[in-house]
Length: 308
Image (tube, rainbow, N blue to C red):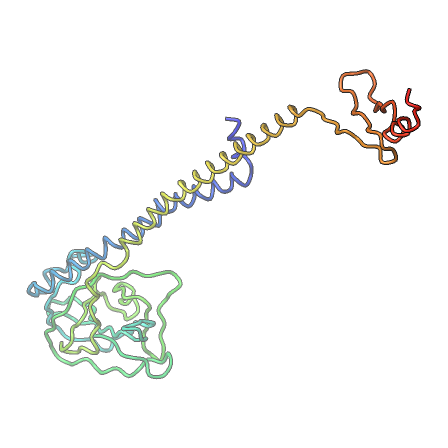
């Protein structure tokens, strides 16, 4: 355990906390968010495909006694007979359709049975800045339309409806909020007109029937959540190996220094020709011992016969 004490240093502790937090977010927030969007997109596509092949049903058959329509009835094609109420019309602002800004036009319709539903007649493009553009009036009298049932979007705090030039404008397609703005008890749903229906404007295109990138994004977040702890484990192992290598090198250097034997090279006296003998290693004296005669003295002695 002593070799793992370095993990208690602040730098390693911070790194471990960051990795653990990132992995937790991947598994509990990011991956479920993308996988949930993939599930909802697949469910929506299935409902649209089913509605394309199904015959329209009377709108009264899907209207509940109270509350919103059933989620499985969304995108279902219905037929409705009633009268438009253009005096209670509203616009949905800040919409983007096919990449360009647009206003969606909402006109209530009173059914023959007395219920009031919200009809989305389509969109119009802005003409002058944020001013409401001119809108073609809805037909008068009783009409029968075929539309697709949609669930209310809900609202967000801080995005309250406004009235501009006498025209109510909202940010969300929520039947409850629109009903409060125009002063009518609307059914909690709205109905999208296709091209060619009585009162239809520019039709809102249906979503593309593909699952999108949400599944791959979700799998990527799961992979990131797995890779982050594995990466931390790799760096910990690399640090342990590096520390082990440093300790091994230190031991080798210490053993080498201890085993070296002190060696003193022979010295030569530059002023004399005689050779100075090396120091005694085990003797009492450590001073160099000069030879009896120098080389020059020996030659002179031989020459003149003075060698003793």
